[in-house]
Length: 120
Image 1 (spheres, one colour):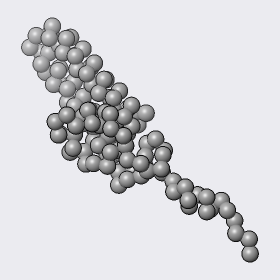
Image 2 (tube, helix red, strand yellow; image 1 turned 60 degrees about the vertical axis):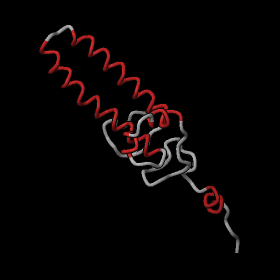
Image 3 (tube, one colour; image 1 turned 30 degrees about the horizontal axis):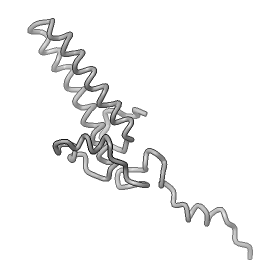
Image 4 (spheres, one colour; image 1 turned 135 degrees about the vertical axis):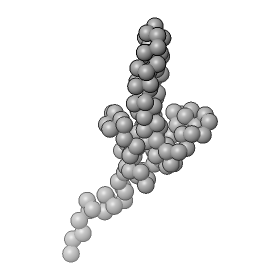
C-alpha cells in the first residue's frame, strides 16, 4: 500500500484511496490550525505544505480513476470522489495496469490449459 503515492501511473484500491483522503483532511486541518496562530508567515508555510498535499491527493485520485477504467480527469466531476470511494473496480487488467486486488489478472482457462499436458 502507498507505493509511489505521488505518481499518476497505475491503479489503487478503494482502501488506499480512502486512507489517502483521510490523511489529506487530517494534515490540512492540523496545518491550518497551527499556521493560523503564526500570523503573516503562516500563509507562506501553508502554501508550501498545500502544494505537495494537493499533488498527493490528485495523484491518488487519478490512480483510483484508472482502477475504474476512466481517465484521471474524471476526478474533476463533482461528487465523483464518492463514486470512486464506493464503486467497485474493473475486473482484471485494463489499459492502466493489472487489478490491484489480483482478481482476474490471469486468464483462468489459459492457466488450466497450460497445466494439462497432452500425451502423444
